[in-house]
Length: 163
Image (cartoon, rainbow, N blue to C red):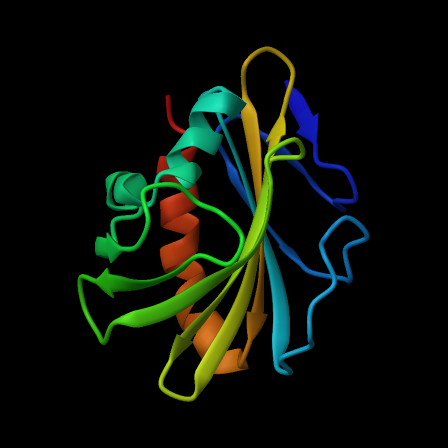
């Protein structure tokens, strides 16, 4: 069964992860361009969209599906304007601010920063036929940082869409 993501140039099949070089995305919120590169990752899995969305909405759950995260120090539920600190399993703490949350569309974005390095990330949870979910993640930032983060993000997305 194929699930085509709106605006995608590729479809995800099964639980396969699909990487697509990002072009400007019409449904992604506008934000200040940070320079560097933009990358889009997509993943499809059997977890229902509501389950996946709830995993995003509760930052305390992030370490359960994102193996690179040790803990998150912030409010209990995702909301625009929320600030926090993410502690990775390796490396320095990551400060963040959530820039937008759209419950109805199941999208959210945030800006992360380590020292002078910033990235902007935009997430979308899309339903597929049946109860499956397609995840879409747009990452924008310096080339080397995006390239280093992409494998971690792929792995996390794979875990996020599992039932």
